[in-house]
Length: 130
Image (tube, rainbow, N blue to C red):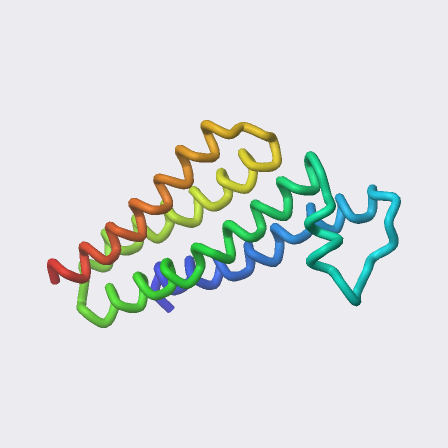
């Protein structure tokens, strides 16, 4: 398996690992878990819990474009080394994104989000140039 494909797997797993702080926030709340209306319960979280939910959703939003960019770059025969660097940069930006979100560091979070966007665009650019 190529490094970019491993990064897709890591990005997928990180989505579910980012769910752990959501469960921590739910455990700290005074509510019992509401399996009938979980979206409503998640929307009622504040502070750390709300940031944890937003970080998790952010990872979900960017997974499909990242995975598509990796696959398209591979199919088009893009430079494997550059693809690997961009894929690793994306995974690192995801980790920093979640960390910054949970720490309430909004400017850092926005900056690393932008890095993630550029890595995805870079992968599509490599595919176009191949």
